[in-house]
Image 1 (cartoon, rainbow, N blue to C red):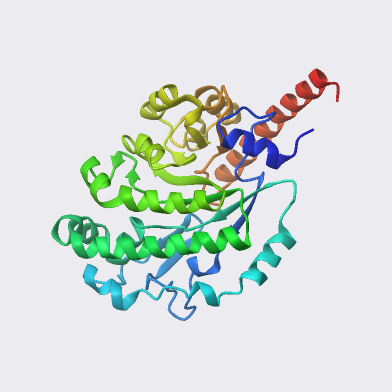
Image 2: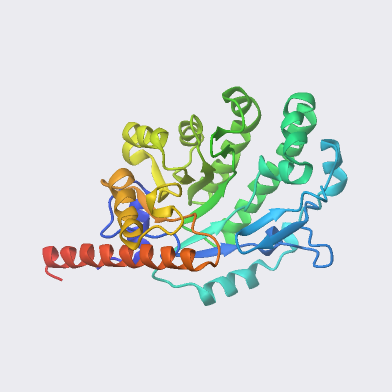
Length: 329
């Protein structure tokens, strides 16, 4: 019988696994501590972003922007000196807690070249800067890219992950925040540099962008993404899946706006939503399951999570039994 790692990587490369791999359950995750708060007194990270957290996640505190003009990034951002980090210690700690049966995924960044300036400056000011102060914004994007490329090298050298996770939230529920022209002129060249650096470490590149990605799905594939994480399951994504087939490997698939996600959805509807995800995005493989949207600690949220993953486990149990019977195991 193959391992969880082997099954996961088969799917991550566009194949069909013995069972449906799960991002939440079949992966060891390596995350660098500096992407969290680096100053406990102020709650800020190395970009000067002050974070607030509740049961639904972490968001920048909009009351305290890190900068008021994009040019201020130079005096505000304090990039960690990567050569001074305890890489051997981080590697030892990661391996001590990692399940050797699972795939190893390293998170290159939790927010990136699009969202870091937004988080520092605010949405309106940053989106305006694309048009009013593009040269300075691009200088910041280039500096962030240089840092992430260097970071990918250290992760590859010390952690040796199967997959390196990168990306950015370029899209909202209604579509991309930027035009195709802005993507091509300002972001695509730098995203390609980052993904090329991931591939240089012998890892697959998983590109995160939740929301209604629209034209961006094809663009992510063009810059070299091997896996697209959490694009909103909608009519556009279905068309892209039909168009690109196994070239479009997805992490996600669960409809966060579908019947199974609605408040107080009945158990049968929640369980059915697992099968809908498989039928629409993973019938021929190339789907790594993740709900990516059940947030909070309410009884309704806990029930959804329990029912959904119980259905996943039962679905996979049947697939594994069928495989064993077919192969005489």
